[in-house]
Image 1 (cartoon, rainbow, N blue to C red):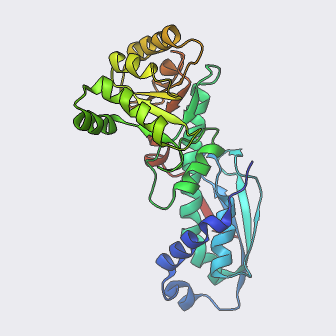
Image 2 (image 1 turned 90 degrees about the vertical axis):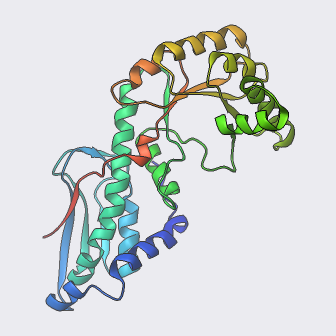
Image 3 (image 1 turned 180 degrees about the vertical axis):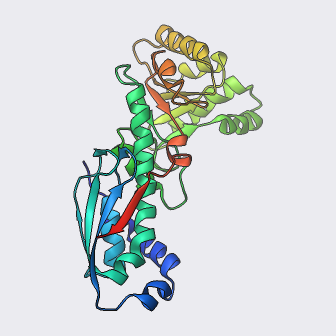
Length: 293
């Protein structure tokens, strides 16, 4: 499993620590002797997939570099309730001061990894990949997309800068500026992107109807995205692509209205990718506790 690039998130962690600690932990400082040392364990309180353990160490290094954190498992491990995830040793005050910030990172990312794993398991054997979206917590995108990968999913574009993805509003703007109908505007947008973006740039386009799909296929996009369609409509899109573009077939991605209850039905239509915004905007935190020993 890849490791988190801590240099990318050090400022975020420092900000989170400052947000919680402020001028000091007046509770711990008022009741715990300054020289008291302690050990503590991180324990899973429910089954799940763990992501973000390196952030625990970074949080404590920010608060007190003398607190040692030793993970017991790697990111990506699937754990059962009661499993020890790691152990802390050092100042009792410092351990308690960092507790909530460390858990906030670990619970959030583990929740995303856990939900992603459930979606990935639902589509196993179909050939469809599970992807995230840009519906991420501001400033947390790198971490949340990391957690998706830990859970077995793939990342969509990281931001607006690394892929072209022409959505419905882009087509509307092109339609207004060129006096075109929506279907022809979507196709024109693909042509414009090919002519103006850097050579080799990945170009995706949304198709809202079968008519739009047929129009954009003539421009050979790398990806066609269909949003909020029924399973039967998506199946028809797969058939159209196989008919019109069998030799240079674009990836077909479906999104909108995807849940654990219906994701396999969409995957079995023959789509290549299923993007799920809920992976990052609605994943419940995994219950994890820090307990002094």
